[in-house]
Amino acid sequence: MDIYFLYFLAAVAGAYLAAGFVKGVIGMGLPAVVLGLLGLMVTPAQAAAILIVPSLATNVWQGLSGSALRELLRRLWPMFLGMCTGTFIGVLTLPHGNGEWATRWLGLVLAAYAALGLAKVHFSVPERAQGWVGFLSGTASGVIAVATGMFAIPTVFYINALGFERDRLVQALGLSFSVATAALGVALYGLGELNVTVAWPALVALGAALAGMPLGQRLRGRIAPETFRLWFFIALLLLGLRLALRGLI
Image 1: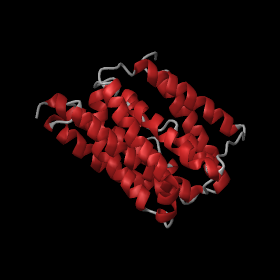
Image 2: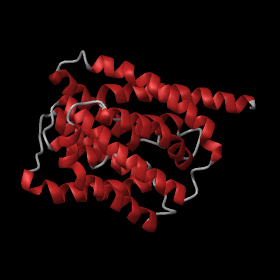
Image 3: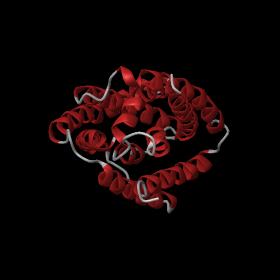
Image 4: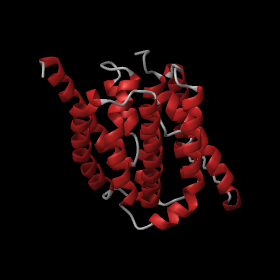
């Protein structure tokens, strides 16, 4: 291994340690933090390829760490189906698309949503509409994930509108991102972005993310629900602004 590659692995470890901590606290943010920190060193497609293994591992861990698995699967399966459908559509229609401007617009939407949350403006989805709204939300998330490497929008909006309490919210995000990550991995493989060159960075990323995540989970367990809600939306706002300003600063 040359010295540059060792420096790169160190940067990957640092980025994923920080991202794992953030994810442990708020249940999301791994892709945004990683793409933001590594964006100056590798292309978005390369960063997304490295992201697949640690993201899938941490999301599965998060999704299975809770007591509401059966309830969440029953309520969220239409969205999961939509994610797979949207990813397939994205692969067919956006194989060579440049996601830079799409990522910036998504960042603005995420920041605006977080601002509404901080202002305590709340959206809700009636139970009778959750099937079709969930499917459409998942489909949009799948298309957006192929274009940008991000699958938080509109997944986070929809899940938060279901009114889950803190731990169910975090578990629901983990399950949703597990499905989205797996679908995105299949898409990247089909586009030729997953290969042996990302093996070492992916293994380093996995170890660092798994080390950072329990530290964040420990902190989350000590935070009151209202404080958690406040920092949840502050984190969304910062992530949104980071995406919106990507490439500009």
